[in-house]
Image (spheres, rainbow, N blue to C red):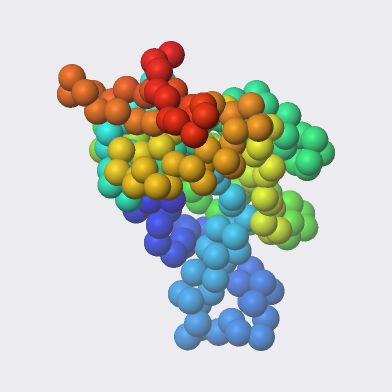
Length: 227
């Protein structure tokens, strides 16, 4: 994640967090600040986020995203079916809590600093769960207006310490080949998708905007066509 609130080490304002119990062999007055960052890492390790473009628009035609995240048009853009992706998650990780939401962009992000209120009457895991719920509402789906051109949608897995690897093949609709990918690389991409029902597009820049053309191969010849 690239937002400055997310990219650095996390620490939070808090009330009653028992650092001496969370880090009994390490905590002292001298290590108090460091323990705050260790707690931040505990929280951050329970967040798993996948970021997409195309929340309100197409996504694949976003020139800025191609420049920033596809190594100046030398990568690919993967297009997913959102409902099929949800089904894949449900089938492979039954009972797993996840959310897919558009990111909200604000001119001034108000009252979105998450504060830890530790309740000593409930177990540690419940306290962490309560805080993660608060953090997901206040932080995860909100960014500064400076990021608005990313048109971001996020898939959030909440409160998982084990890394989840979501099978995406059943949800993959199309692969878009960047403008600057050498043509000699097209063959490998074509072979990877040709029998899986996945559309293959090559990006074209004309009339000062991106277009996508279908890319196919017949009798060892490449063919392009518009949708």
